[in-house]
Image 1 (tube, rainbow, N blue to C red):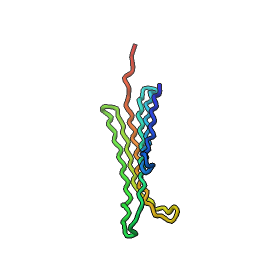
Image 2 (tube, helix red, strand yellow):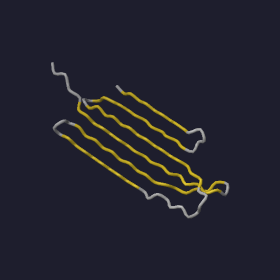
Image 3 (tube, helix red, strand yellow):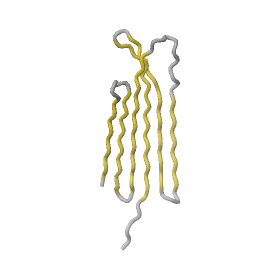
Image 4 (cartoon, rainbow, N blue to C red):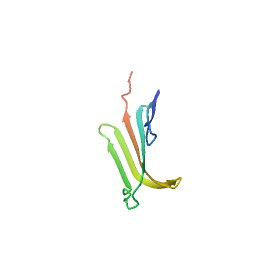
Length: 109
């Protein structure tokens, strides 16, 4: 069995976008839950002396053998400067990925 959920949200002025997806699957006694998020914001830079945000990476992996669970989480943040029609824009983005693996109880006959 597999359940999928997908969201694509965009602001009215198209300067902020959020895309997320969630997938739940049961296969061979393991339930996997995968969540992905992407957030992007565009800001026009009027002042040339603005500082760009520093890039950021965070990774976490946990394993619990007693409860038969595994979890993985990764988050990446960054920014890009772009020029369009002679105007300077700062594009700030964030990606995140979360994976949970849980053992499902087996029916023994």
